[in-house]
Image (cartoon, one colour):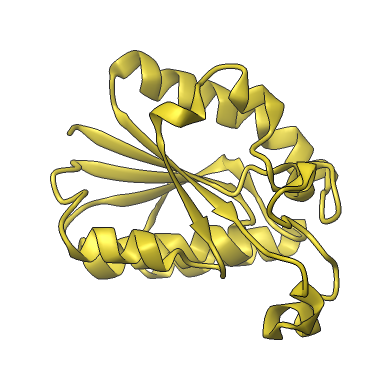
Length: 177
């Protein structure tokens, strides 16, 4: 495997749904272009999906962020149409994660599933929550693999928190490209 692209939570609720922002809407074309580049080069792509269920508001996350979002089976849980128009998600590994970082992805990283990647790049939403969490998992389990975050393919809860997350990742030797 040459390169690995991790597309984090490019779901309707984070783009133009319950927790959507104009910054999230603005990165969609950049993410689509990045996916197309990886497809054309024959590189590996995986996806994550924030996944919640009925009763979300009764969970710890729901009490801290009392906005129902990414409820499995709802349109807001789905990867955005612009991505589904260029790739068949059935052809890709999609990690449904119950919290910010994917424990299943962490297990696969620890088991060496992606140890042959020459470089890992993350794109998606939200920079300051799920992108940073999954980038740190990559750094934790693949210590010698360069991990990058494409800044123009990410958006945070706010522009300020996006920039703070990029700075924090840079301090952890994650390359911001």
